Length: 48
Image (cartoon, rainbow, N blue to C red):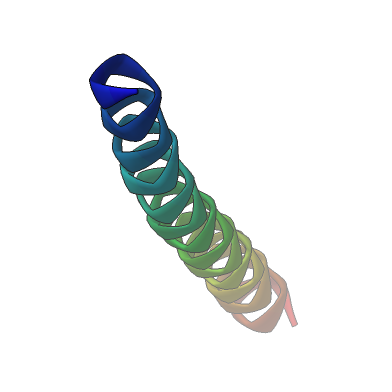
């Protein structure tokens, strides 16, 4: 019984951590895309 409860607690903690990790990865991807777009925009603007 105690082991089952401990496993359930660990699983819940891992799920919360995974959700946070996914959020951080999505935000990092959005920021990376924005940086690439800004660099491309400045290059295009400087060539015109």
